[in-house]
Picture 1 (cartoon, rainbow, N blue to C red):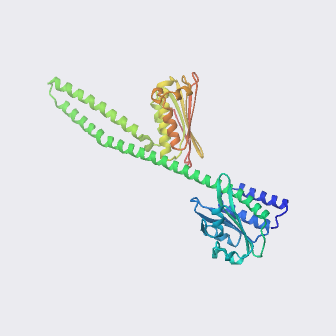
Picture 2: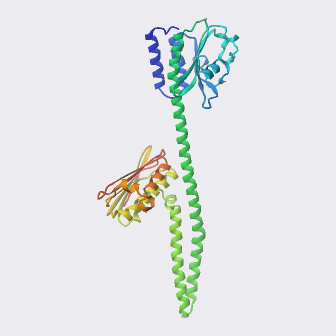
Picture 3: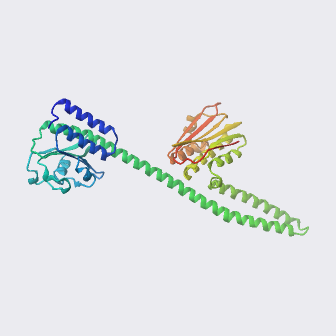
Length: 400
């Protein structure tokens, strides 16, 4: 091969490293590696076969023209043909001539093996990743491939194998992350669908029946003569019970599925939460069109944080900020209350602590976000949730 001098070999290896650094996409990487090898070694063609995720077959990932169009269309089982044999044994093979006479040879019309006399086939392997594929070079004219030639190709194969393993790992991680995101969305969607159904059942069933009962009781009370007083008193008690039950049903319905999100969106939902807090709460909220599961998670986090303001902080004022800086939406709740030691609260049992920090963190995590809690005794509390998003809509609004 023509790359026998160290300078040429070093230039080739530097080109391979540069190609690997350009990106993890296997197709473009394999094609570029094949061109570099042919250009530096004087071979006529180069084929880069990559082991698939199942570990049972090799697929042509890249080649030099005119065979580059066959990438992704040629496949060999492990052990099949010379390439499959090299992969199964993890050993290189060199053939000077007469390759089609060997028992290991398999003719592939797409690769026109009859046009080439000599070949070198080298496994692309690295530790600890193991086999990643096979690197083949062919020449039209008869050529003897030396040990140095094979060693150079093996070095290139090891570099490419590392890139292949990394690309495969990144692909798997991306698939897992996507599956996790989809699972989280489905879990939240299922929870909220059930809550929406229960809220509708309460509203359309229990609440409507209680309202009807209230009308009947009012009618009975107005129809009574001046006596008996006992009956009138019972009707008053019944009326009070109806009012109490109706209030509880409405509260349960709102807790299952906050109707303000359906009617007005997250910004107004946060303002509604703020109005229910017995201290001054300022809300500055960008009005963005967020996915439903993200809106619900942020609303529940704000709801829990503001409940903490009421129950624990003794704050005179609080500030709620919803800001969107693609690809992230940030919810921040700050109060000027008594504060607390975050580490000690997290170390305590959730039910005993009563701050709901694990619940808020879990809600953020389920939508791919994070929760940060900053507090210290006498210095107030700041809770920040950051969640990824990708669909902005409009501008800011503010509420006090």
